[in-house]
Image 1: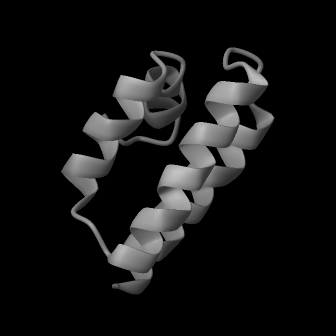
Image 2 (image 1 turned 135 degrees about the vertical axis):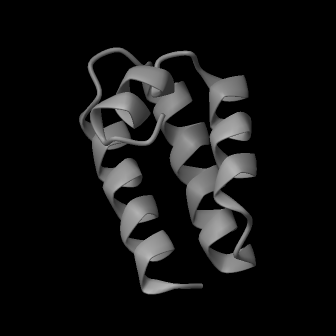
Length: 68
């Protein structure tokens, strides 16, 4: 995985943990998926799609991080 993708994923993971919008269950599911994808090196577009399926609360987090 490129350093850039790894950095983006870590920033998203951090932001998910800090979210006031998402429930603890949504946070946990999202972080678990992010960690799995880091290991599997999935495409970033697919990651976004899968995270949005878990919680709409991830959308403002991604937008805040500049990842529309």
